[in-house]
Length: 190
Image (tube, rainbow, N blue to C red; front, side, top):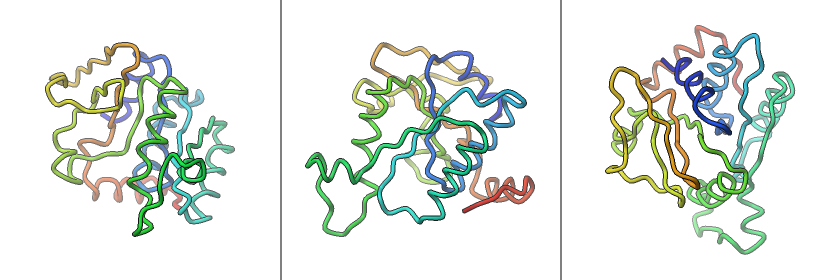
């Protein structure tokens, strides 16, 4: 199913991108994308929203994967937004919630029309409502009333200018599925 989703996006969209954090879900997505298009190169670039709190091993893994597979990498830096005064550091030091603005602006500036994310329905109740092709408006906001039915694995990628579609190839996977896939495929992790 996930390989089919990657191929469907390649056929329907002009400028997709894979969100890549170096975590288990994004590593599995990259592995699936490589499988989907082998022996050809992956026709998507990667987008890393860098919180500035990454382990050096994760960044080294990311850079090795980009070099090994001849991928294009875009980095949106939370630290640059803090330094420019566009974001304010949180009192608790947590930066994950600060990723939204750099992500949204990168999507708009680079004109990505499909954005692959590693969200799974088993993670939380809000994600359980997401479709595999999840329409976002020009402000990257999700409106449940505008989502389309996805019967028989038929996906509708139509969107207006300025909008984009978030695509979740691992939607129907569980965390156990991800770990079992990593073990079965012997995927390197940072």
